Length: 295
Image (tube, one colour):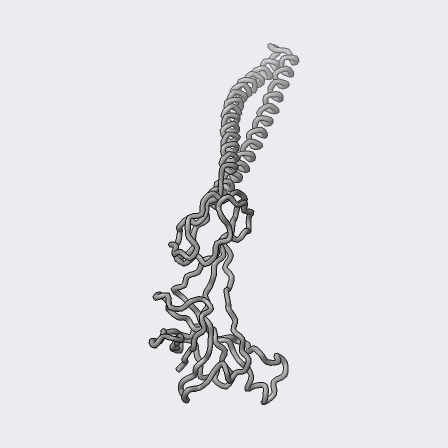
């Protein structure tokens, strides 16, 4: 299955004064690091890795097959299940023919029994003959009930097999691990020829076109910071700024006592703020230190 984990590179905040400074009354500068969501690709089946169809660090498209796991055993199981279904279908066909034959015999026996009852009343037939026909009718009815029970059992078994076949087909499809997004392969954890089990992490992928930067804002500055605010991102050694926008502000403070707030501790409260940055040019890298300027 596919599990999404938050890949956050936290940076140390020693003193608030070193993490943020106000360049003028309308500008705040914060230190932060770039980060992004990383998707872990895991195996959903057991088997030997047959193919690795990418290069670590390479770009892949959504739907590209990245790994294939050998499916010979699963295909063999599927063939056995299909053979069982064919056998059940043949037995069901024979069962329907038997029920049809019993219905015909039962109809004839019941008609004969009714005629014999009238003849017995008229003294033209013996009661023994009537009892023999009644016994035959009862036997045919019991035989039909048995055939219907067998048919129901075969129908139930066929449904179970159909469900098992569908599960086997899903397992065969899951043996091809596809990329869920357009992104870059950050890490590869298995190679061709290795045995994998369900849940084994096989690779990590991320969309580096969309990056986030986490900064920490003091309680004093927080009223000036709002979701949707514009933010400039400055990288060391680069003159031009990247454009960003505030997408999330923490609802709880950090680095402060949770229960008691004095006048002194209120000034040390900081709140995590995340800035979304368009990184289509690939300038930002995971973990890169940057300055964020919020107006």
